[in-house]
Image 1: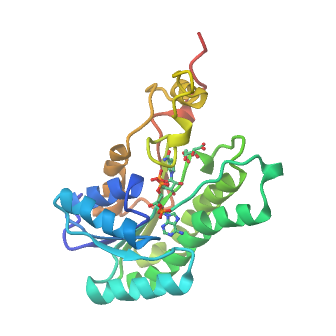
Image 2: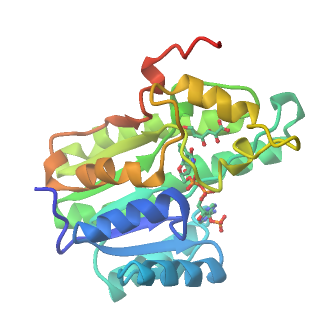
Image 3: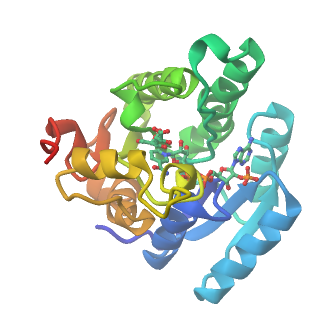
Length: 262
Ligand code: NAP
Ligand code: GCO
């Protein structure tokens, strides 16, 4: 029940990082993977990276905030590959700026990619899922779907909204055998979090690196590969009775007050 043979999976923003790991996992479970990125050079790099893993992925250049471009991409995928059975709304950005210093344009840009785009892409794939009588939508949420922290006001607002968009797609389309769930990763070692792990000029650990390891029961950053099992589960028949759920893959952060500093 965990196999995805015969399914077409679109993972947005999957040239590298979490999206790449999840797409690789879905392919290894049998899915035909298609992905997009905003730049041709990244799509080309992504195709090479998938090939190196023995995966024949198809890549498309598309800015997920551009509704016309998304609709054109989905139509192209349906013509060239097939109807999208599994959508992973992974593409996302973050801007770490104190809220009182953040411009409205910067706030809107984060909301646009992290919340409006999952709406746009989900809206583009749902009609064919309705015709097919089945579909899986997985939204990549965050610890910030539940928690706030300094400098990430726009990101937390977007990811909190994405949690409720997930629940609303579940509510509106569950009767048509479309399941919409979220994955809430903890702190994952990817380019997006690289600035939070950078060594200090004196060679010491970044304070945030030590902070997160103290907040994670496992005492470490998680690896993108650790999201693959949960993603395959939510993309497969095994989760047909799971809907509107945010599966936190956080190593226990949300359950833990944090290790007492020595
Ligand atoms: P990442 O390394 O920054 O990768 C993000 C991907 O999204 C890149 O391929 C990027 O392409 C693409 N993207 C950004 N804006 C796009 C747009 N408008 N249209 C199409 N593609 C776009 O991030 P990540 O760490 O892999 O995170 C992936 C997702 O997981 C995000 O939604 C993030 O919020 C979420 N998340 C991450 C963590 C973590 O700790 N890393 C934890 C929880 C949730 P470009 O390079 O061309 O911009
Ligand atoms: C940050 C990090 C986090 C992670 C992730 C945690 O600045 O706090 O970027 O937001 O990306 O979302 O789940």
